[in-house]
Length: 313
Image (cartoon, rainbow, N blue to C red):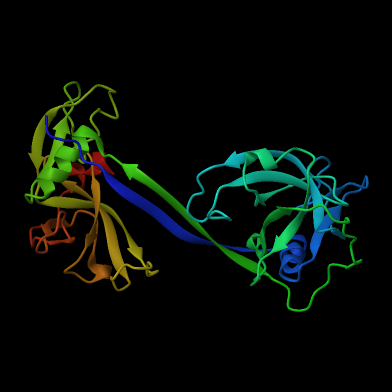
């Protein structure tokens, strides 16, 4: 049996969100070294603040300054920090109830080891040297045996408030396509497209998944399909994707390769975007050294009759 492929994979994108008045004040406060919470109708102070009471769903907006000192309510030791975490050396994840707050804030505690951490220990905020209006403006918490700090009475109103944030979402993992897709990928390196036939319904699925999605039975019989096919449905892309060197507008389509029982997707080229249509007959275009078709172009054949691909829509 051929070796199953595997490779490291990174999924990463910037997540941009706007802030309501409560979150805006909280993050702007961090930028100015001010810790803010919000008071509920029954007098509790929530830190970090939220815009609606999690118990009553009441809208909240009464901002309250709390102290930069507090108490550890629970903790867990992190012996091996990962990329992007607050500290590069081992640290404790802690829930800290800041003085004046009724709820706890999750962050890192810089401590020499787990023996130096305990529930109930006093801590204080260590502010980042450069602050932009993000939770990372709190560099971490640190042990503190001095006098408890007092709030300054800040109202939560600031000049130049933070109105939005960009958070980088990233997932690192090792991906394995499995036996069926490994065979499919290996066949593409030879400019061939191979699917697998279901022993029950006899449909040929491309790309194969190792099992028929309709019958639920395992598949193993390999069948070469294409290389030509038919456009079943398509969309016109008008927004340019980051790091994708394709000029907009362009067409992305579902293509039913000849002999396949399932349409795969691919970009359509070699024709104006507004001339792409259902039933258009296409063939793959390969570039030197590529492991998959760069795009599909018209073959010049007459369009396929609707009845020949309607079951693949």
